[in-house]
Amino acid sequence: MSIHGTQGPRFIYHRGAGDAVSVDLDFALVTELTPSTEYIEHESEIALDRALIFRAERWRVAITLNLWKYASPSTKYSTICAYKGKAVSLYRFRDGNPFRFNATTDMLFMLTDVVPVHLTTTDYKDGLTLVFESLTTPSGPVLPIGEFAAWLSWGQDDVAPLGDTTYVYSSLT
Image (cartoon, rainbow, N blue to C red; front, side, top):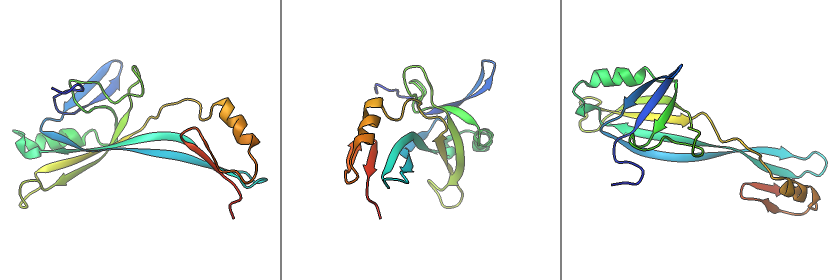
């Protein structure tokens, strides 16, 4: 038994006013779970220093669904396609917790692609690849005050890290 869960993935679409629709993805496998980090580039016009400031970390989740194992594959396909482009809460394991920023805040994902694929035969497409991309990112300060003060005090020829995510490069020509 896994500490995170043992059952297949699912997503929940929240219609508002406490009303939610859950779509279980039986016979599915999470094939991609990739974070992508986004930075803002800030260049000083006076000193020509360049700072890369952490902005957000987004997630991309791809799930391969064995559509041929369902009693009615066309019904499951049309059910999933109805949620394309909608914001949902995504669960890697339906008996576990959804993707979260912290203990209480769920991440929201959008179902961006529903792609039919060949899994067991080349005669017809008997599987689906579902791609979810995160919509929300954790909020909070980008740079602590001490690191920002240190950034201001560096000389023109310094190359130094700020924390784990920000770097300043100077004299770029």
